[in-house]
Image (cartoon, rainbow, N blue to C red; front, side):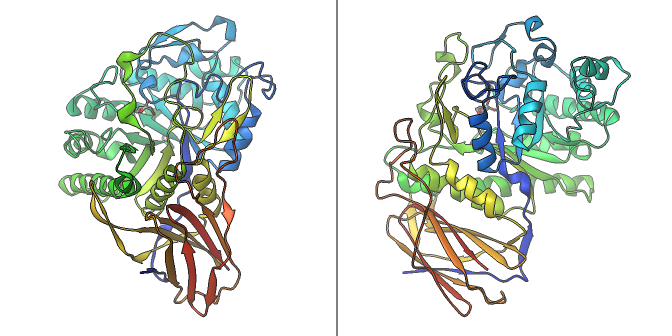
Length: 495
Ligand code: AHR
C-alpha cells in the first residue's frame, strides 16, 4: 500500500519560521567545557573556542541558541562569568553537581555565537534570583552605556550593546528538581514582575514564560493556565519541553514520538488561547519549544547519583538511524506548526544528548541526528504548505494506530522541498499530488537510512551514517513518485 501526499500552493500553514532551527548550549557535562570551549585544543582560537565545533554548528544550519541553561541557570549568577578570567570565582553548580570555573560566560558565548552566525535565546535565573538580577543582566547586555552595568560591559571590551532580543523567564519552574522551583501562582507573579522591569530597560525584547517541563507532569495544562492568567499580556511565548525516550522493545512507539509532540503543541496553544478568551485579549502567544530531542531519559539515574566534578561525561547519548528518523519527524511536526511555534531549540548542541560529539584534544564528529537537522534547516525555506497525508497505519503500544508517513513541505518561489519519514520497517511507496504547482522537473531524493537501523557514528567510524542520494524518484505531470526506505528520513526537492 502506498502513501499519498497532496500539496496545493493555495493552502499554506505560514512562512517558515527560521527560529525553529535553534539549539541549546547549557553549562552541563561537556557541552561547554571540551565541547564548544577548550583552550589549548589544536582547533581552538585565542578565546578557547573550538573551530571544528563552530564549523559543524554552521553546517547544521543552527539559527538560534539558548543559553546558559537549562536547570543550570536557576542557581547561576551571571556576573561570575564576565570580566577578567583570573578574577572569576569557582562556584558550585547545584543542578548537575558540577564545579563551575566560570571560564566561559556571557561574553565568550556571544563571541562564539557571532562565529556561528546565530541569534541568542538568553535565560535569566528565576530560581535563586529575581527581578533585580534579570534587570541588571539586561542592562549589561543591551543598554548602550553611561550606567553601572552597561559601563561594566564596555569596560569588559564590548562597546556595542548586544541587542539580545529573546529572553526566557527562568527554566522549568514547575519541576520539583528545579533549584528555587515555584508554584504556578508564585511563578506567574514573578514572571509578570520580571517582564515588567525588563521591558522598561528594553521595550524591544521578546519574552518567553515557562510552560510545563513535559507532557506527563501532572500539572500540564493547569500550570500554563495559572501562569498565563498572571502574565499573559507581558509575554510573547509560552515554552514547551519534551524528550522522547526509546523504550527498549517498543521501536514502533519511539518512531511515533512526533504524535506526542503534536499533542503537546496543540495542548499548550489551546490553553494559551483559553486564557486569551478569559481575559478578552486579541493577542495570541506562540510556543517556544525550547528543549526537545530524543534521550534515553529512563536510563539516566537523575541528579542524585552524581559526584562533584568539572565537565564530566554526562548523558553522552549515541544516536542510531532510528533516532535520526525520530528527530526528522519532530522537525516535520515543528514545521507543520510554523504558524504557532515561533522558536524551537534542540537540546543540546555538543556532547550532552547532542548532534555533535567531541573528544578533549581530539576530533569532533556528526551523530546520526545531525543529518535530518542539517538537511531540514538547509531546505525548509519560503512557506510551509498544508500537508494532506493518507498513509498505511501502523500499530503502536503508546499511541495506538499512527500513519506510517510523517511529512511536511515548503515552497520557496518554484522550489518545492518535501520532508518525509517512513516509520515503518518496509519500503514505503509515496505519491505526491502536486496540483496547482508549476510543472516541476528536476527531482532529487536524499535519504538518511541504513540496513542496520541501530547503526551509529562513532569516533572510530564517524561517517558510518550519512545522507545519500537515491535514484528512482519520477515526476509525470503533477504526480511525483518515490520510494522511502524502511525507517528513514528523506528530503525530496523539485523545481
Ligand atoms: O537538557 C537537559 C536538561 O533537561 C535541562 O537542563 C533541563 O531544563 C531539562 O530538564
